[in-house]
Image 1: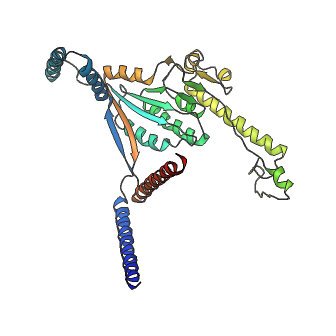
Image 2: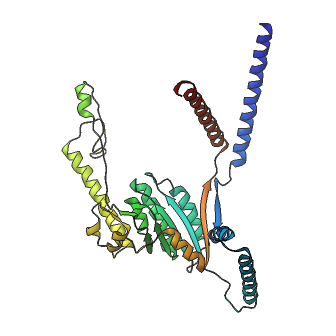
Image 3: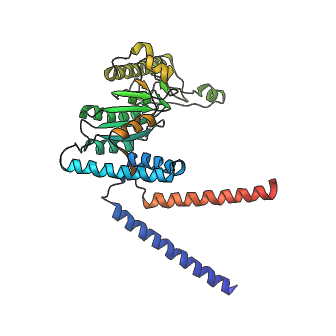
Length: 344
């Protein structure tokens, strides 16, 4: 028993020392991170990616002697091109295409990365270059998508051509972003449109009354609260709430008309959704084409760079993520053992 008590005391001291070390390291890491950027810009050249795909396929399907001769000819042509460029006989400056991605959720959370990516591109892009945004979003909160659209408006103001590619969906706030593009390309079955505003508010007032529960709402300002979840909603409040939706819809329509005047806005701003080919006839998009087709075409004409801003996680976040992964693995193993023991 005495040995057990001594061991418990030793274990407690060891745990205390480990915790103290972790705290000191966390503080040191926090001090080092203070003042530094919280993320980094990752850039990859899509030309190289497409070339690697082609070369991997050639390795499997093209005769080795033929492949060797082809590579020799390509190397010779590249050497001649560089020599001509050095003499000034050909223009070495290539057009650049910068590719950004926006995968939208209801809060438009991806705007945090988009704003940094746009700032980076605009610091270097020329008027002869192009920015391509691969956009996927069913829409969401007005203020979030309003800010995302404003980031794309910066590109328009800078005079850099902007092309929007939609492979799956650009609806509601997603289309508010898409309309900023001078060109909008959509896959054949991409969902486009949903130019409308919706709000759903459940009301539990009668349920509370049934159980003799009062819920009081106190406001300063006639329309500080129009409709609530638990309070009693009156006709005046509902009318004001509906009017707010109508006003937002009108601003939405005006925004689209500003950047895409060819659209017959009253005809399409009904909340309906159209698939790619029909969206062309409604002038919501310009052409049916996937982003893959467009970018491979641009890669043949010049350099194509993909940009992605990645936020750095703090030590605490990394520690928490590691703990969560470890817990997930433990639970998965535990459940698997239970299944083997009791359910097999």
